[in-house]
Length: 153
Image 1 (tube, rainbow, N blue to C red):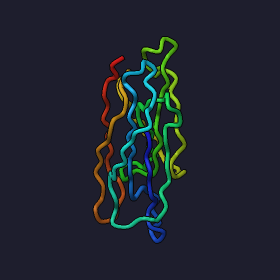
Image 2: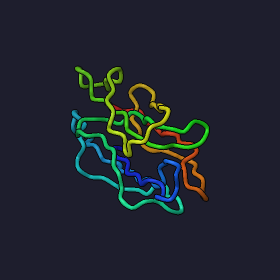
Image 3: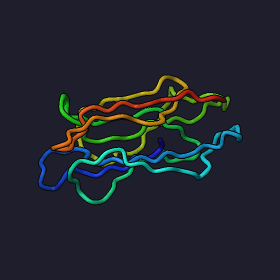
Image 4: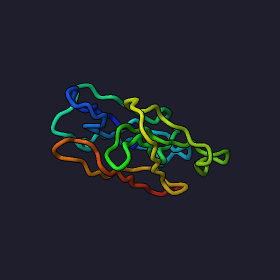
């Protein structure tokens, strides 16, 4: 999962939160030792609150040789997720492992302030999906977990 698109809460709602989320999974060329993205992708709607503002705001892994290794969330502690960005890594000098000691961060999707919570994959694994629970009446995400998978070099 290399891209996340989010919509903000309805204008009439004073709370700041992600009210809709979609993800984009990109395919990597496993026959090429460099493991570049091959251009194929699939979009999926992850969740949608009962109402949200129009206009999707995206955060994404920027380069074809970058690999998503987690998420950072801006949260209202004990309440809800306000914003998201992707943590990603490049391959190390050997080209056979990810340089997880020096991660990079995509821009925040919305720009809301809040406490930071980091969700990281184990070393040498990439983020492949996520699960969440959200308030089906008000809309905010209450819990979010990532799924990871080991890379085979």
